[in-house]
Amino acid sequence: MRPIRFEPEATEELRAAVEWYEKRRAGLGEDFFAEVASALEVVREYPATGNRPPGVPERLDTRRVSLGRFPYHVVFMEVADQIRVIAVAHHRQRPGYWRKRLTSLS
Image (tube, rainbow, N blue to C red; front, side, top):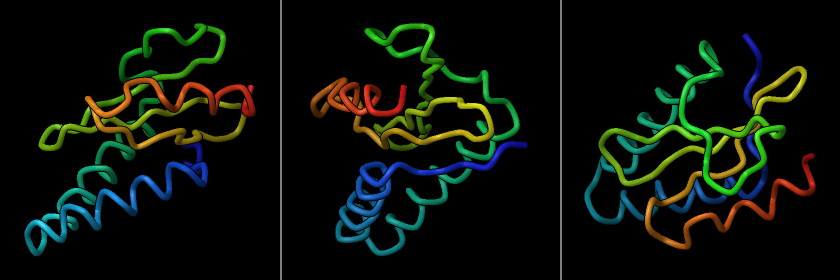
């Protein structure tokens, strides 16, 4: 199984979302983090899982998986020796904002 590496922006998005949910209710941020971790374990084992995001060239092999309980998806890209997490993105807030990050990775 390939290692998973977070891009700095994705790390910040994850941190901010955990903090936001934790402020809403104690333990909810931990639940969010656990859901992201669970999704990434599936991605690690089955990297072809998820859907291709619209507007991204197929050659970039970018996919996204939705979280079941939260309105977020994890956007990731397969590269030679690892899976890179591009974004931890809310479904409705600025859709596709993370696409510009792909140019520095391709």
